[in-house]
Length: 212
Ligand SMILES: N[C@@H](CCC(=O)N[C@@H](CS)C(=O)NCC(=O)O)C(=O)O
Image (cartoon, rainbow, N blue to C red; front, side):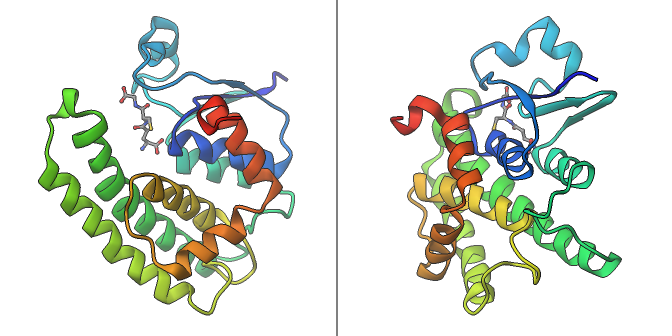
């Protein structure tokens, strides 16, 4: 069977599947295409992913877009114990609750809105007030997460898992955007950033952008 192939590098969303693949020790091939480079708009890529977005994954006959869905698939298909795998319905539901919350409120509603109206202002229109209020909205939800994580190592009992990986990718993104991140979350992020798989994934995903 062909190697697993992942498309996409250079963004918080593309980091996630690369990081999961590194955690799981998967032998994969990466095509590090970037957004806004024209590479997602070629006929060949559009035939693979009609949404013309990264990340994207092909594993045999499994074709998947959506960073969180790709991460979940890789973990379910190739578990190795380094990422928490929910053992029962209730545990899966609580994990999904965190994932939907972080993806919906922090990634899409806050950080990507900031990206649209600042970095991508020529496409979506500039708006300082929208960027400021999206940043404040992220800060409000970071408080919720900080309170919850005050006396916990990870979001779920049983170790580092997908909700932590997703949150860490959002915390990096938020810090890069100058959003106020509470100390409790900065400490949590710092502990997770020591993971060798995170460090490998950051180098693979951002390459020269990290100065390395
Ligand atoms: N919900 C998607 C978002 C994917 C997405 O918007 N990717 C951006 C880069 S972070 C992209 O490919 N943008 C190119 C474009 O919109 O043309 C996910 O989590 O994978």
